Length: 212
Image (cartoon, rainbow, N blue to C red):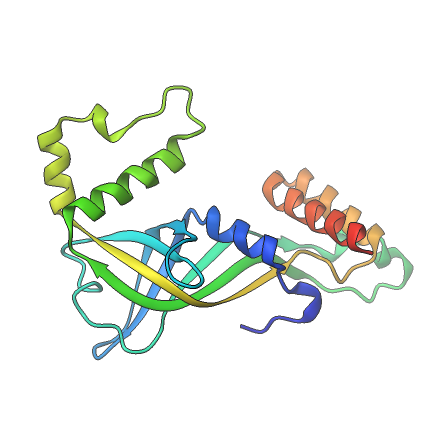
């Protein structure tokens, strides 16, 4: 990944991305070519030297059956947004502005391990459920469903774990623009209804100001 220094994510940002990944595209290179699946993950910081991302695939998905050659890759992405040059204060000053795209992403490389083990998979499903139900007023739990039904569902999936070897992360959030332009970007994103992207730009701007 091309990461200019002003867009490089620091360790805190990387940890935040890994700890709250949502879903990531798992990409493996096999003898049959590249395979990819969008997979919900949880991060285990204690697994291996750099932690691991743990998820599951459908048993009928060939990706877990075909051995990965070399490193595998999980692509994590947060909010992304088009940035209009009309939002920049500098447009009125000199007009030397162009459109761009803001985004936060991480490329997580590692060794793929398959867990065809019902106990491991059940533990993973419980962690995933706890993570994503945490904000609900009445969180659903695995135990809310009949045990026999859950057992059948677990037999239909296989666990996968990406034991991390390295992470490349990028936060392209208008850090290369003057403060007045950044304020315009935040206002423009909020006006367009993209609150998440606006918040990320604002947070990155405040973090940079604190380091200055």
